[in-house]
Length: 359
Image 1 (cartoon, rainbow, N blue to C red):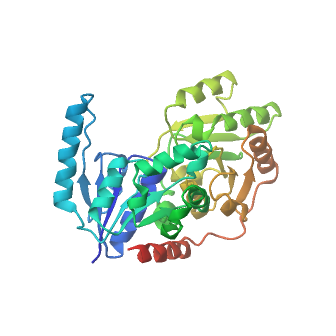
Image 2: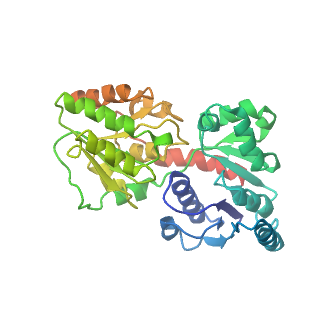
Image 3: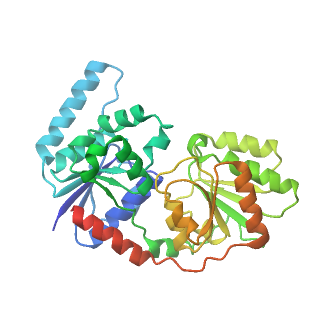
């Protein structure tokens, strides 16, 4: 039985965390010995982990006293090295931004991988020096493999680090289709299905990345033309207040409903007709796979892997409110029919082949 370790910051709600829990649970069922190492043993997804998965907590010290901080972190590193150095057949730093995860993964196995979840060149507004610093701080050159979950993320990375081409591979995220379908059957009481077109956005409320003001502006334009529809927003974040204020200012309280963070968002897919993504940038949008599994068409801006939506699963638009407005209007008037069901089992088999080659 091969021993695998995946390192991350925590297991709170988020796309990276969703992907990690799905991956770990699937690998345990396939007979692997899986350990997850966390900077903070916290987050709602802890309860979703298979009971066979072991959890290591690696605390980093954030004291304002530099001497105390450095000394405590040195002791923690030495303890981790003494106990876990090369004890695993494979290890991965799954949270790319976490320097502690990078250290844990590089220590735990000679067969280590750094996971990339985004198009980092777009994330850093085209600043190649910032992207270089980000990956150099993570000690990217010391990993045996660099794994990207999107083709565009891999391509832009190799523009900056062409010398790492032989180490860099593409491996999409797994999806637990059976669980998603089952959880979508749960009943929700805060909002009901209505006989009007219903759009759904699921994600954290962070304007810089998610640009939910585009949806609010598009909704306002459609309301002025007297279209009947509604928009459900599942999620929260640092900019929730901004969105609440904008919705009030535009008088859209009867059309846009902020439903807050949901541990199980899938019933809201069931009562919606179309998923909408307005982001400026994304890693691989997990909401794509969730929508595919639940057979919901998508309106999306041109973020990572949008080609999968273009291929008969929705509408791809430019990154502005007017384009989103036009697509929403088209859907309200004409609907959208998905012609070919998504085979998540075949999709997962291809991902697992790539993973097993890594292990």
